[in-house]
Image 1 (spheres, helix red, strand yellow):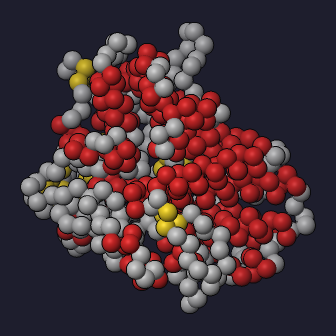
Image 2: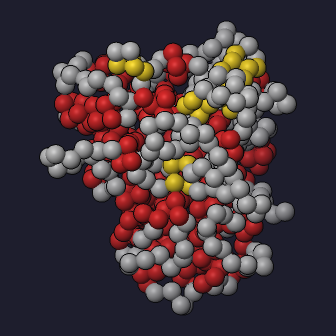
Image 3: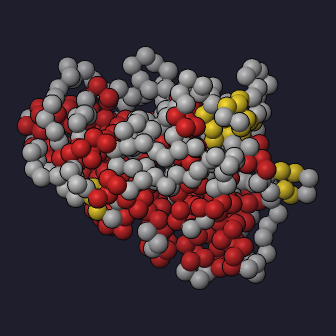
Length: 471
């Protein structure tokens, strides 16, 4: 197989486009070459569905993004006795660049980026598209390029990532650049996508899956784009930029007098949908070996005799076998619950959706951005919205010490965004609070980043970033 730049040895197969309610027609397995050379309305539409399906790929697998980052962030365990790497590599050793654990979250995102780049070029070759339709498709594709790059840098952190992704086959490999450069590239893609979506007309020229039903037009999808822009802005330490993006997002927090937010309001946001159908992808977080970390119970705050409601809503104690799990000297009796507006937990099923970003996170992002721009009282107000509604905790005083505001930002992000995408692990790094990731046993270690995969290093002789380990 021809080697692709940035080490993509596995070209995205259009077979990966099968996805719940994506409504992809039978393309008789067209190749990427055909999509590049002679795209059609049908192949571009299928590829657009494929971009979203590609980003969904490895999100909710047992060794996927949510699960592995949950282990590293002391949110979860995987007690799979048949695969010792869930402990030997993730918790008691270094992440191995040659394994499907330490080498994860690189080839998949870059393969999806390649598909998105092909779509961006291909739309201009299809005469049947209007200028607005071309713009809408480019904005959609560029948003997902940004999200896939974010997945790479979230996992590689200080090692960096490749951002020059649109290269011809056989061209010299693009460099692995440092984290600030990656964030700048992600923000550039999101901002280019904003301009595209603003010129994208009234509708996308392809079917948007049900998880994006409230974000299924260029204008509403732009609000999702701006939400992601706010997240990345804070990752890049740009609090003012985060506030600007939040003002253009789907943030819902400031209601007229006499109106109050509900739990359903906190869950507003796009989701990835899953299916138990044979030709589709199921939510793999149903895996019987995945359990909640006991520290979630130990560290939960109290309101009198009542424990933080998020613990009861987002985890539960199973009443049917297995009622507990154990391996490697640790154990747990709590499982994670599905995304729900209910005040009680419901078990994850193969069709449970996964949130990409929710209004609850946007409120917490605004709290963080306000605090970092000097609006402490407003930041505490936002924290209190989440604390009282989502957690059932008492409101904070507006004049609490600055250090306590930071602690509350981290605590509420930990419990509100529990097991939704590695947030605690990422936050521990960016707030310089790695010490919060307390090892459960003396032989446990803290892995801070995933290494560059072995296949990529083999293609990059003498690449110094390949010598950076996970610790």
